[in-house]
Image 1 (spheres, rainbow, N blue to C red):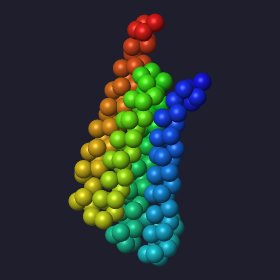
Image 2: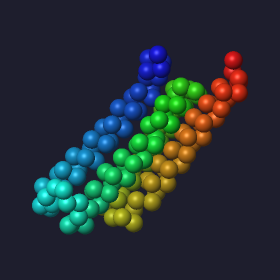
Image 3: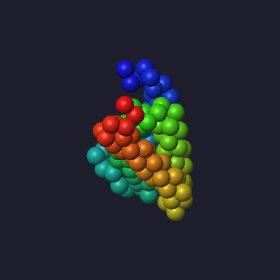
Amino acid sequence: MLLATSPLTAGVTLLIVLLLFGTAAAVGKGRHKYAIQAPAVSGHPVFERLYRVQMNTLEWAVMTLPCLWLCAAYVRDDVAAALGGLWLVGRIAYAVGYARDPARRAAGFTIGALAFGALGLAAGGGVLWKLTGGGS
């Protein structure tokens, strides 16, 4: 079973889930602090940044998690976990930077995007290798 043979990737996945929870909690806290009633998603600039951090992180997590697990399955657990951990660090830097000042989001975004690209390339390469009979 893949989960049993990929404990590092499983750990990174749990940390990504924790990040998603944290961004959702920040939006909830922002709604309360800035009196933004649901379903509104605008009103105070800080709240709007918190909301964008949550949505952008969710959008990227949906693409990153399958690549993470495909990389673990077709390459190696430690490679997937390292790249997933780098993605996580980038997303945290993005979230903190963007929440403080939108101009400070670029470095974290770039780290996360590069880590995602590496995960996708590694996963795709591993799948192609297997499909073409490599390693058998």
